Length: 209
Image (cartoon, rainbow, N blue to C red):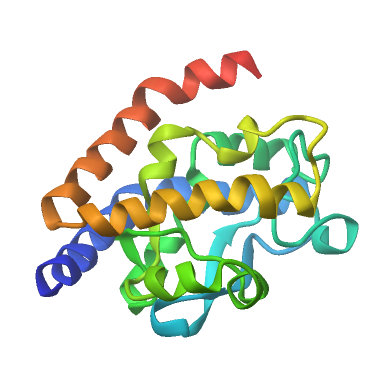
């Protein structure tokens, strides 16, 4: 775990320095093309049930939570802005989470953090196991369902019930699988696989959209 934390800090600093121009440009584009802040901050549940502020670039219209569901994204969600769609497909919207890693709330690799409402009311037993480790920016789900799990749901199933019954069990399954295989070298394998997806699959996916 000490090695993992050292790697998290060094890798996050490296990524932040490397992509800082991309983050600055992204923030400017968000501000120029839609009303609202450049960043989206929400509450998530971390290791041992600790609640923390979760950072992302804002990819939806301002106050999107009042227009549609706040805890999941719809397929072909109309709340997503044009710039936001590109940021999501290229996973640029996730870059601010490297600051979460530096703060110690998250790790580079680990189960994706969930909102308190879900953790407290659904699959509680499973969450007790999952929350023994820090949540991560990337995980096995990113490799299987690149670039976004949402794109693989059926168009008619844009409901909270669908998310709970169909999507959440899949997420939990992958998280529990990660816990069984977790090691420093397994984390490296996931990171390299996600980098491969971003480099070789992103533009191909964008062309299809």
